[in-house]
Each structure stands twice: as structure tokens, then as C-alpha cells.
Image 1 (cartoon, helix red, strand yellow):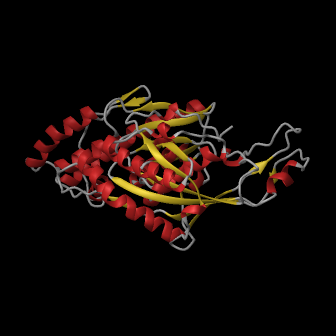
Image 2 (cartoon, rainbow, N blue to C red):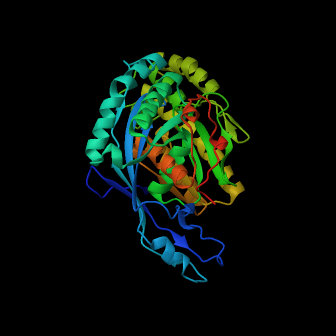
Image 3 (cartoon, helix red, strand yellow):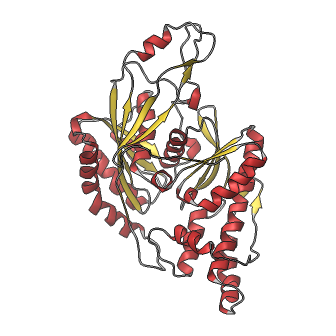
Length: 406
């Protein structure tokens, strides 16, 4: 069944806990198994605070994550000679603050890099101050600064990178550049407690089916042209739908009123998908039907969702079959769509599997996910010079060595 991450803590603090299990390995080291999250270094403080800055697209966010580790727990586990899994208290990653701002252009328009960068520059300082105040954390308590390196839009990325570098120099803290795609995956794994799922990453700039293997998140399938979120956004502009809170959300709401399915191109090529031709078709043929009163705008939204989501479910199922996995994790902004979750759940149920999904707090771009991925890298020995934080608009998911997974 679908598992939605529910927050039961006060609004300011969101506890994301996961259970770990260990086994003794004959003195050759202990590795965490449950959730594939290995043990942190023993020289870590009982609590660490990570500040993450995200600004790869039209959202700018600052998150502060606290990692709470029980002192002495690792030593106790290492001295336990067991032949089976050992349970212990949960370590916790706690999101203390996660404010963000969204650049919303007028209906019928997209967000330009220059305007979006200016928006981020106007809000980043206030968001940092707000996050520190909400988390009740001082700059001295911050362990390191984490920032999105890419992929994303050049102007917005650089605006946030400059802010992160200034903080690192001003506060004399280490800085960790983070892959935006990997951050989505890690936030999803921790939030939903998904151990080793096949991941469907769907957003405005990326569409990928991912599975982990040999310290890399391997891409099994992806879009060969535009991303699924970009396809939805451009169609929303064609219908002059509002960009508030997002074009995809407004398409989802309008699609619920659709009653007629309009046949659209279904383009799956092996493990890859294509949305550009589908978008061109609906922009031309769909509008002709709309103007001729052969269908409604709701029918077109309904048909577009059903077609592209079916394509995504198909390639995800193939990846599950190839990897022998029964669990799917959906991440990225489009992952909030309930219809996509329902279709994926129907497929997973047929395979005896499950779907792990989140709501808008963690699917949509946020600083907390950057802090989360940066925390993992920092805890397992990754170190970077200031020059390593140079932004790149093209940064493949499989280009990152995932140090924290066995």
C-alpha cells in the first residue's frame, strides 16, 4: 500500500527517524543494513547541525537538519558478538526548519533564469535568518554548509552558491556541494524508510528511473528530450492556467473534472520516454478539438496525465523486474501528484510490492533535502575545497560516488 510520510511532531520540527540493524562481522567492521545507511564515524559529536541551501529552479529554500547520535552506542554494538541482526534505538535526522520561497510568474509565462536568480538573491538572506531562528540554532553550532551544485538553472544556482560560500568563509565552516537529484533520493529514503527501492524521479527538469548499485545511483531509463514536469508546465501555459502554487498542481485539479479520454501519442523507447512530440501533438490537435467543442480543457488535462503517467509506470515496472525489487520510491515535484501515485500503486500491488510517496513538503525542492544529502557525505569523510562548489547545469545522478551506502 502507499506510504505517505506523516508528520506527528509540532509544525516547527519534523522528526525523520529510521531504524537500523547491525550484525557482527568478525571484527572486520560493522555496516548498517536496514535502510542501507551505514554507521557514521565514531568521532562525531552527539548532535550535529547541517544547513542546506537549495535554489536550482524557481524555489529557493534553506533547511537545517539535526543529526542525533546516542553517545557510546557504536562502541557498545561493536563489542556485541552476535550471529543475527541486532536492534537498537533509532538514530534521528530531525528537520528543525525548512522555509522556502517560490518565484511565481504571471499566468501563461514561464520563469526566466535572470528573473528567478534575482528573486533568489532578494530572499536568500531572509530565509537563512528565518531558518536559524526557527531552529533555534546559532552559526557556531552549524557543522557545515551544504549547497546545490547542480543540475539546474545557471543563474539561480550561482546566486545560492555565492551565499553558501560567503557563509562558509564567514563562519569558518566546511562546505559540501550536493547533487540535486541525489538529494531528492536520499530525502525520500529517509522520510519513507525505503530500504533499497527502485526510484522514479520526476520533476520540472528531470525524469529518471534509478536503482542503486556499486556506490552509484544508476539510471535505467530517462527522458530523451524534455522532462515530464516541463511538459505539464508548458501545457498549463497554453491553457493560461495559474502558476500558483504550480502549473502541475492546477493541471491535476482540472484533470479530476475530465470525463473523456483524448488519444495521445504514447512514446516509450526501450527504457526511455519522450514527451516533446506528445506535447506538440496536444498543442496542435488538442486545441483544435477544444475550439471545436469536441472536448474540454479538463478532458485534455485528464488525457495528458493518463498518457504520460502510464509511460512512467511502464518503465518503472521494467526496472523493478530487472532489479528484482518490489518497492518503488517516487521523488521530485511531480511525485506529489496523487493520480501518479494511484497508478504506480496499482502496478506495485499486482507485483506484490509497495509504493513509498511523500507530500509537497519533501517532494518539492527544499533546503532540508540538500542538508540531508550533505550530512551523509560529510559524515563519511567527503571533503571539498571552495572551488569544488562551482555550479554546473548538467550534473548526472550517476556521476556521484555514494560514500554512505554499502
